[in-house]
Image (cartoon, rainbow, N blue to C red; front, side):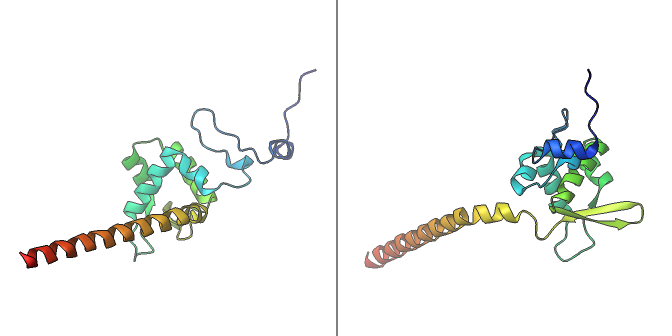
Length: 153
């Protein structure tokens, strides 16, 4: 006997925490997502390109700045449905925010986005800062030694 199609609630129960993926576009289907972490968001190259475009279009002191879908489609040279689907994933993950401006949605980076990525990177950042500080101290010492030798000659 052929299996009947599952109702939406049954699909959600069956899928659990698994995120189904659109076969051709590698875009996560929002209907089956329980949560998306920053690493999953950043794993997709198109989403990173969108984030780069939004960062470039965003003025730090202007809360009205950002980019609409048409501008992103043009600059990324991607089909509008692809850009819109990725923007939805980014919005659902809290990485971007959208405001309505007439018939358009203006997207900008969220100020609280990717906290899990930042938290994971922090110990490494601290290590790099300490290493760079040690290098600076060493170079200062070498510079001081060179000045002393020049003064002696």
